[in-house]
Length: 235
Image (cartoon, rainbow, N blue to C red; front, top):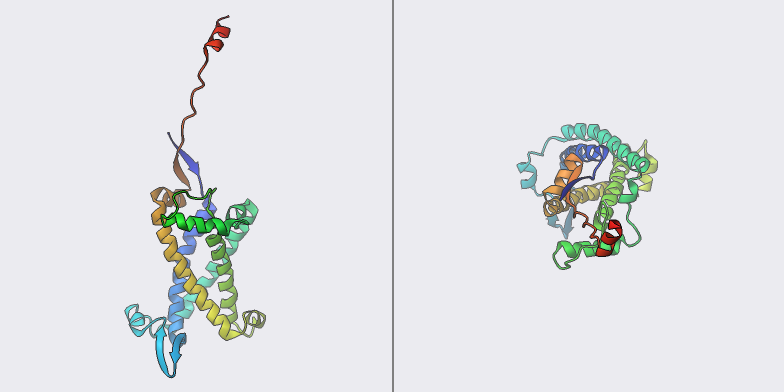
């Protein structure tokens, strides 16, 4: 017998779907800024062996010569990104949902078992509640990454006014490296997230939109009366 079970709150769904286009715009506008000073590459003895983004990548996406546009979008949407993140963190604390998100003592061990199950190497999946161990680690990591992006972003944006943040990040140059690495982490997380959503199926995806999922419930078996019970009732 099928039943409807509430899974995700409206606030969680709101923050999730609002954050997706905001983060997309942030990454896109960040690429417009990065083009103006594309300095991350592997160069040995004057020869460049590897670049993160070759010229054809910039030209295909029409990124070159759009620095001011990128800065305008990036500095505007960073406030929406920050406020949405703060709102979500406050909500998880007040509602108590952080208990479902924060990794437990054995989460890293169970996360390895989840990976083995997803790769069809292990038949039985580890027990889970709302989120499994791998999801707990990933979702907590993405929150920490968001905080890191805000701190490193402010350190790059206003290195004089926020000199203490720049110092904490190891200087302006290292703060820029961290900011770039976190952006690559978002892209990597997004790709893995999409694959996991596809593997989880439509019911799981629907729960992030509607807030509920359809589950199969086994009806409780009827209690059989013994002959002795029937005799007692007949008396």
